[in-house]
Image (cartoon, rainbow, N blue to C red; front, side, top):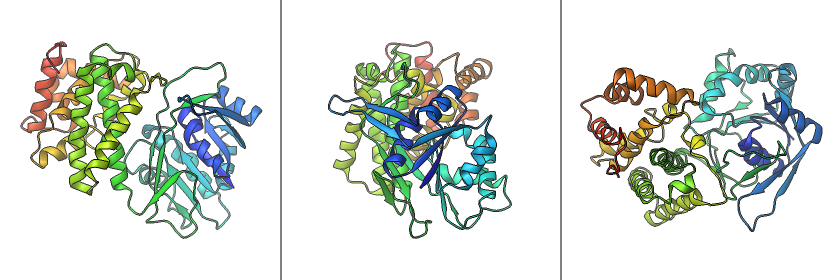
Length: 381
């Protein structure tokens, strides 16, 4: 069985590619990093280590790679003969890989089903990828399926002498929606299959991603360098817990999760963030603040839904305000946001990037918190 995976970075190698190989697939990674691509071609194997004392490293074989910039025709050929295509490139890059994917699907001569799964931190990532592919095809063939998925594994920024070695946390979750799939869909090791993925996507997005983001933005505000260090600060921990119990209430209301189980889920994820063996830098988690502050993403969406239900989202508003203070000159989105605030003010920024009008209570909460933070005040938390 053949799998094509877009993205040979740490998540691609340390999570999705690993699980595909464990499920019996030969995996061809697609990337633009020439060093990684050539190393995968030459060696056909790499090592995954785990940030836990009791977990032994694993050797991953049956892998190769292609460079999408210099070997586009071979990438198209690989897609044309694949059983599965997965991605872990980041939501903003799905549009870039869509032309290659579309051409590969167009050149398929088999009637065999193919499954395309976007493994990204976004809601309905595969559906979004399908829409991008449709810009380059007259229609999607009947034997091509785009099941939505939710994925979760912390893979921090890291640097090793071996360009292929990657270290990950032991925990992972990969959930795939089955409601639009035909009989005989592929079953991957360690994957949970559900008829409706929405509750699982939102549980993960509003717990793991929301908590991670708020820990990063509050941590940056207080001069921390890593997520684990941030959570040692009682102000950050209190802010993260407050926000996650707000999103928890929302998830219980929407989907009927068991309160005790969800409380345990929150605490388990905070412990994951605190893992001292994971040097998870704030600059990695906090990057792309414009995307994370979007109206349908991990911060504003749950806050707005809570406010619509009559619950003031004070913890989430604090996290959102901290995100608006975040500054990283090496991050284009951070620079854009900082410049817009300087030129247009915080209220116009909230309206433009967060989609919140000045008379909305959530907007007022965020602006009030921001004004206390900027310049930073020790009294904000």
